[in-house]
Image (cartoon, rainbow, N blue to C red; front, side):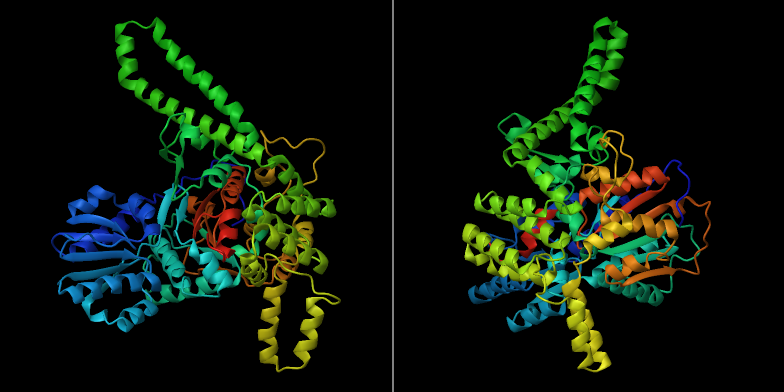
Amino acid sequence: MAFAGRRDAPEPPDFGILKRLARDQLVYLLEQLPGKKDLFIEADLMSPLDRIANVSILKQHDVDKLYKVETRPAPGASDQFCFLVRPRVRTMRFIADIVNADKMSGRSRKYKIIFSPQKFYACEMVLEEEGVFGDVTCDEWSFYLLPLDEDIISMELPEFFRDYFLEGDHRWINPVARALQLLNSLYGPFGKAYGIGRCAKMSHELWRDLEEESEGEGQGRKPEIGHVFLMDRDVDYVTALCSQVVYEGLVDDTFRIKCGSVDFGPDVTSSDKSIKVLLNAQDKVFSQIRNEHFSSVFGFLSQKSRNLQAQYDRRRGMDIKQMKDFVSQELKGLKQEHRLLSLHIGACESIMKKKTKQDFQETIKAEHSLLEGFDIRESTSFIEEHIDRQVSPIESLRLMCLLSITENGLIPKDYRSLKTQYLQSYGPEHLLTFHNLKRIGLLTEQAAGETLTAVESKVSKLVTDRAAGKITDAFNSLARKSNFRAISKKLGLIPRVEGEYDLKMPRDMAYVFGGAYVPLSCKIIEQVLERRGWQGLEEVVRLLNGNEFSVSDSTVEDNPAWESQRVILTVFLGGCTFSEIAALRFLGKERGCKFIFLTTAITNSARMMEAMIEARA
């Protein structure tokens, strides 16, 4: 799809059906265990479940007591236990302990395990080893997709990043392919699929195989989504490591947005209690500031506050009938808007306080220097000082990773020095963390004396062609993050602006990082869609280590008049940041198209670093 001239972007499809499908399937599974039952829920399924089926819906279907997995049942518990869990070995051991304890005490119960999104063979093996496989019935809740907003769908699989990119575990590729199959059947067929990254390629191939097996159920229907773009997180680590400065990103970095909602504490609510707030397009205040650079937000909120006050003040000159109309039609809405406005002003003040304490401006300055390749020595000194002052183990790691990726790895002297200082400041237990960061390519040491490609060519001469291919893959993964400078230059990721960058009236996607950097992931998507493929981007693809694809579905009519041709599903495998979402929303407005986001989970730099840390608190 070449970008059309600027016109109003089409409306996104209605993703409410995904929630209804998930709810109906869960209710069906619960009713297969008739009568009263106690439900054990895995901790990280609680928030997603709350968005699909709240407690009252569960109670309607004979759920008596609710327990968190890892909590022992009360003595007077029900005669039926239902476990709603992720397919994890440790959870299987917990269930087996409960079943075996009941056997020992002579208590007879029925047990049902519902795996979400699917069960794995390893789980059944553990149940068999523990001697309880015959005592439980197993089922799957195919809950792949949770709509967080009108244009964001999450698979809520935060472990995907570590499992695939660090451990090389491919088990989540099947759920990704099935999620794509479901979306294609409901909102497709998708006319064109683009992608880059090994995981993206495997997911796409498996999805196509599934489509062939189901013999294209959606063929011949007018699609609501025209194109799909799949991208691996490791194609662009830099963007995920940068400090977020759009409002939604800052709220996520500061308060942690979980499953589309955030807990604002007493420092925000100006009371002694916390409030859980759903952040989506229905929040009239949030929807207008979520994609804005933080520097513009205070001005908007104070203007909004004055406008609200003016609407309240209209009451003074009203007669009784007008007052009655005002109270019945407008007052409730105004009060709700006033409440939300107070919360977002409180959130802004809290963010300002925290960021001032953390030398946020200095950190941003150091980041911009790293992205541009200037004052590297000064930035390294800033990171060393950051470590010595023990500001934050996560922040120090993030800055070291950003330095490593933008500089094609650290020179051995700097690597050893920073690593030693870090371990002295934060503890030797982080040695494993450095091992993980090296394996994944986030924090690497430059090879002394010769480049990786030189080593690779020497080794390749000593082995067969087939083995050489495998070794090349291994070296590719080692060298994966070594090309940021060259890619940045090729794609123009660092804007050259005369004078000040106007953040209130942004001219490109760089505004999401204060005008300093266009997110690489978003730039790739823009370029590929503009060119309708990878033609002319061969050098960039080589620098990104390949695995790109562009596939057309010959059975889908390519009708430029269809609105769906301007709706693009972007799939981030390994997590997507709110900065990337804001950048692509901006691009969509500029180009008259609509980006829909599917991600394995919402991520940010802290979540990425935490996934690598072995020293669990």
